Image (cartoon, rainbow, N blue to C red; front, side, top):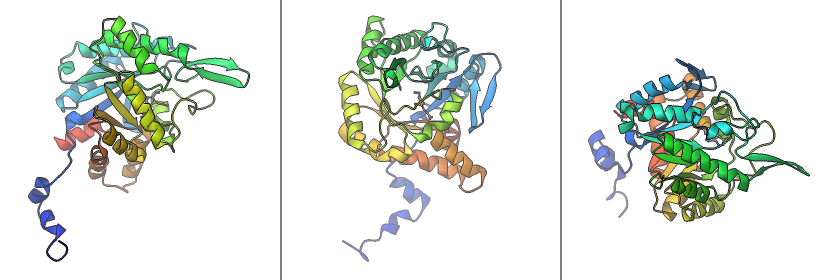
Length: 329
Ligand code: PBG
């Protein structure tokens, strides 16, 4: 049947009609809000390249968590800015590490019953060189060592789980990290803690503002020997297959907006829950346009999130989580 028997506009005539036939939705519970925890008390320091996002001390993070819970947000993702850094990234797995402190404080607050607490497992915020694994000198300069890093990632995941993380999310892109983390968790009695692996994480320019937020820019070189090449979709599928074979319970795709095809392809391929990460650069790019008055803020925020759900994401990590939850509520 075609025109004039068929008229697509019939089902667009009113908001109630459009609501009836709407295929995709975003709910506050689909959203995960990242927090950047820093030392001190009463600290709430805005990140210059991410207006509206703050480095928060533990006490402020508890307040932010309570706000997120009251808005119906689904969960929190924790990053840490330690007081000091070293070659190994010791702060990542220290029992009194900055993220561990925040997890304990929020776990024992009323907010924790309504929120899934997710620890980002990586070394880059804690290493003096800013890379996601251990560095060693080679004949050609330096390299990020894969296998020796795995043990440290396992220790980090265990210490986060013991401090109260409901989920651990490795973002380092070392090979074999999911299996290493699974076995470390199981040995530590944390066999019920799920792993959300950043299965396909591309070496992206869109992480720029995050590196200011988390103070994690590499001091030399870049992350291209461990994060994926932006051109590769099939390789992303192999990463997903491997992470699932190693025991990942859920996967995270990152960045989101420039990689919606990857989210879609993952959705076609696997039945595990999929998250999309609307990364710092995606956030800041929209904020810049809002500041200039070039985009309608509320509509653009919700449309950007809806696109990720339509591509196949079950949940979305986004710095807009609180604002979007307010708009949706
Ligand atoms: C740490 C990590 C990064 C992001 C999440 N975890 C930075 C990076 O890989 O350089 C980026 C998140 C964002 O840009 O919002 N490995």
